[in-house]
Length: 270
Length: 256
Image (cartoon, rainbow over all chains, first blue to last red; front, side, top):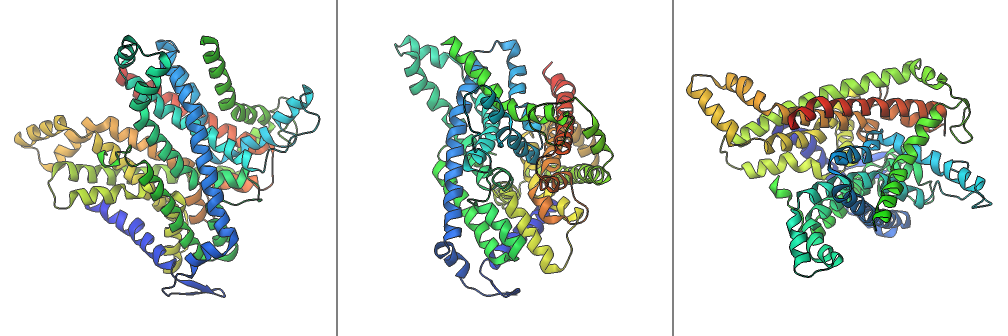
């Protein structure tokens, strides 16, 4: 056990502490000055592009989380209760197979579909549905689509696992007692699957808000998310203190999401 | 109602497969731009990929980092799980929390933290650094998976072995590890997949020798190209083959 604890201390806790300390330092010219100042955090509210990045990240992440849950739930439901038992495992496996595309390549593939001369524009033009190609790539729409694609697969898996655990007796009991199938779903099945949904939603939130690849490939440069701003500080400006402060903000947002969903999450059970 | 459900399933599958299908289809196109209309098919982009020494080197680096970092993560995770499950220690709740903690943090932050440390110490970044980062993110998973599968059943078998005179080392190698093999293998393969596909840590912590996702990233800078489609399709087909083999041989057998 000692080696694992030492490893975590040396390569996670220590770097994290140094990063937190660095968020209080500042950059003068190219020179790093260790200090205790809250300038970097002050900048988050005074520099419009930083404030905007936080908003953009939150908006995209919340949109993605809600849409992904709404799309994945019916899919998991159909696979769990409508697909014949012997095909179930195959259909589930097929519905998450593209999960194993490399993450970078998956975002890139959406460019093929959504670019100006891409698959969607090309087929809609030849079907005569539109007369001008639609501008889809390099936009928030593209970023959200790329994210939703990934998380629908993830959530289908987690929600499916939840649904098949439910005994069909709950639903039968509700229907016997006079509930319509909608009422049985709304008042019995949905509350029972809520913990599973929330675990999935929390996971989606955490992975989505911290992701750099998808918005960088699909989002264009009109609006930047927090991870994009962090990478920009590292690359172009070498401003590690500001990047550190932004990283801690990112962690703060994840903590808020945790607090919001904590009553359904039982991470302490692990 | 039935009809709507099958229709929904069809639409969902179209959405899920649209990008992958485009990726694979246009990797076979006889032309530079992987966009409609389709011409071909040709395998020349695959030939191009296989003869690209930089891509092949990156593939080798990725395999190396994935296998070795997963081995380390699994070993450390197993030892920690064994220690915490078998011995009553002061502060074991705290240590469990500490070991799980990296799971709650974005990869970007793990990578940035390590980059800052390496910079401050004046150590250059390398595949080693990326490997260390991958152990940090995979250790909590390996620990959690192996810890969760340790039950009273193994403990009884271990007691029996000890009563019969086995020393600690023999108990671990002859009783504990074989009994936990499914969990350890699952943890190992999960860690390997995550490391193999991990981008941001590898991007921050490597420079001259890079892993495959980082190399693909630098290909993307030149825009859409059929060659990128080919390498993407190859990685996809490779992973799918591995997943199917695992499903059939490793996890299929356990169910049977």
